[in-house]
Length: 120
Image 1 (tube, one colour):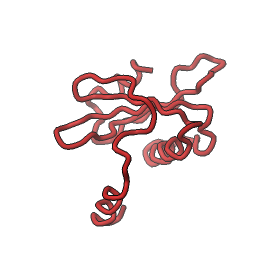
Image 2 (spheres, helix red, strand yellow):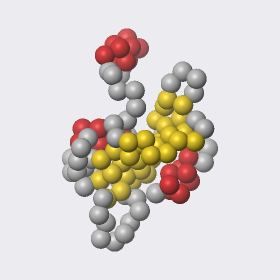
Image 3 (tube, one colour):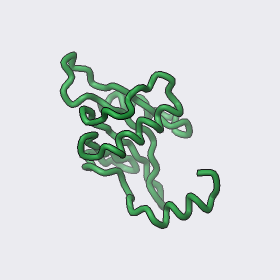
């Protein structure tokens, strides 16, 4: 969003306070949500678009139905912030444990990437 007013208007209208899906982990200030790409297609696509801003080789945009997304958040005393996510195929013939992984720049070099890999 280009202006602060746009963000404030969005925050006033948007009723999403956490990712869609189930919270599958919580410890201290961290929580992890599992989001089914088939049930939450637009959310999954938006995560992929977001990742494309930071990852050159991210190619998953539209066909998110076959993927699960795991979104890591960190909460402070005011709100929760997305730290990063990883995705994986629901049924991988090669038994891969992740497809894409992203830690957002403000949270890099703090161990969150290792946490996401271990969680996968």
